[in-house]
Amino acid sequence: MSEEWLDIQSFFADGDVLSAINDLSIAIKQEFANIEDTERVQRAGTARATLRRFLTRLGEVESAAENEIVSGMDPRFKELTDAFASARRDSANFRSVLMRTGAGSTLGLLDATDPRAKRELLHCLAELRRIVTRHQQTDISAIFEDF
Amino acid sequence: MRVHLTEANHDLLYQIEVVQELIGQATVSGELAPYRGQISSLCAGLRQQALRNLKDLSYNLPDTLNDILQATQGLTMAFELVNSRLALPIVRAKPGDRLGLAVLRWLHDSHSKTASLPFGLTDGSFAVYPTPQVPPIYLLPVSRQQTLLYLPLLFHEFGHLLYACHKPEMDDLVREFQTTVSDHFAPRVIRDNTAGTYDESYRARLVTAWYPWAQEFYCDAVGLTIGGPCFLKAFSHLFRTRSSDQFYVPRDDQLKRKHPVTWLRLKMLLDRARKYHLNELADQIDRAWSETAATIGVREDYEGTWADELHAPLRKALDDMLEESRPSRFGADNVWAADSDADGDDPVQLLNAAWRQFEQEHKSYRAWERQTIDAFLKSR
Image (cartoon, rainbow over all chains, first blue to last red):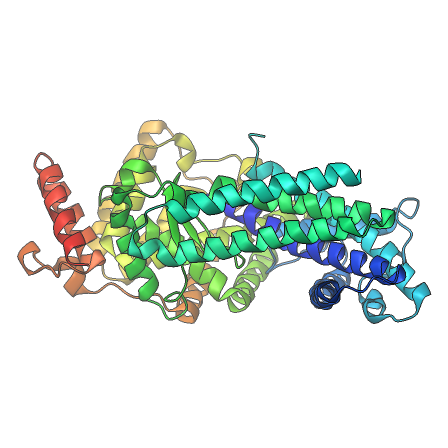
């Protein structure tokens, strides 16, 4: 009968997305530097799958207007989708393809082989990370409020 | 920056090793062994991440420093969660945990989806952390762990785990009920051509609030379904005289909470109790709450977050959720069995017998309870 469990669930969910962003971002940069690392390549594959699931879900919610009543969804995830929508409107600070065209149309970039597209993917990942990190801070504050 | 990150990851490696050592040295009962295995694996994963960060740092690519910093921060927070929450059931394990662990073992074994899930028990207010990433941890206040009367509240917490195990289907059922709530509170003023006077954002907040509230109603229903009278009595005793906000909460405060007003939860429980033919007990508890409310000077008022018309749809949603998740169901044999006929191995029988004994023999209850707990644990 505690309220903390939703924060912990949300903390882990955000953590999975952030780990995937970090893994994929590092893998692409190491690839650009011609570093061969088998474990990195494997992690990048897992990260792509995690991000594909996340972006697909985000794209589904995105199609609804921000103030539309969304049901059957954890309110914490709804807050994340609202933060994403808000960032998309903030074109002065968020300029990647992800922000300009939305989650659904960014899915193709995950498997890009062209270096230019990969650089754009890095830009998308960096901006997505800013949003998810800020969202996870709320969970962290709730879980570790004594810090 | 590279040096700082290297130091931070070495420190994390050291801290993780210390926790691994503590976990390995702890003496735990058989019920807790699978949980220890799972947390040990989790620590091994954290250790791998620290080593991975150090390897990435060894490539000396300035472009990756921010990524590695982020990965280090993520690892730090995950480790803090292990260190402050997840390792506790193992490191603080004591012989007195066995009663709660034995009831939880029986509870997990009672359902095919939970039988193979490890679980932990630790100190705290009644709660569970049912996350897909780590084994569930149940929290119980210390005196409630060593005694029988409030253990039925674990059945409610188990409901959260059942919800997590059936999440897609349960979310669909909750969504249907949220739609009913949304429709019910839709602005009729549009028809009267006075649009704009209704606070549409309030309706959105209310519908959103019903997502966790519906889960709590479901978990209460699971508790009653598994435990029968003992759950209803424990629930009522825990909350009835606790504080005035069990009866009334201002609207804005309600919307911020993950739990609906307790009095409304009780009303739904009493409705289900009557459905389970526990009419006499339901009437008694209903009267007790009404008398308490009258003494406090509170009238039933949910400030527009509830309407009686929602009662039947909520009851149906809860029936459907129970049908979907199928918790075990108490029966006359384990509720009304005479103490002499009691099956020493059945926690539901044990906990119902405890409440009967407590109500009949306050003075001798503690001695009876000690003896009964010993017999129960010996039978396991």
